[in-house]
Length: 169
Image (tube, rainbow, N blue to C red; front, side, top):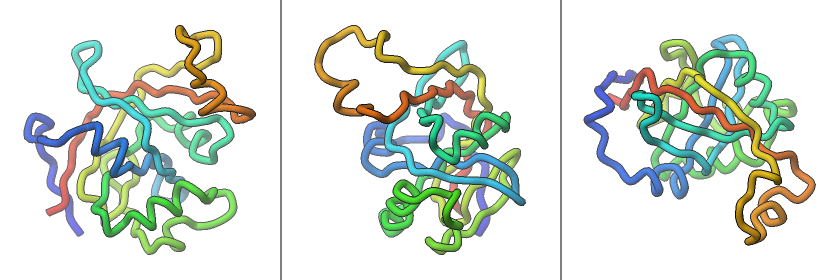
């Protein structure tokens, strides 16, 4: 399967559907060793005159170590026929299994990172800035910390420049 690089201005989709409902795989590492995880939280926009994707990863996730180590990662989007694969990648740890093998996804090197042949859309991202979410940062008292964190650690946010956009040929 081949990808074609496009200009980001060619994209026409609803980011709320693309991220929040269709989900994405965040993948970091290299061809020899990488990990991927499903994400349904994130933002797309413009910051510092750059096209930005922001994603959130808890420090106890296996992918966290890869993201911390590498300068680049991918955010990959798939058709509905891969929903089970994305669900698996979001509910199993790469510490315990080979997610690509378990789901039938085929990894492929793209620019400075890894994605999957089955993806329909891939953003290659370069990390620019990170920060840790914390309870003291919440400005409202509407239960978000209790609902989304409980005993889980707060996420680290990665503000990243989209340096490449690829679509399936």
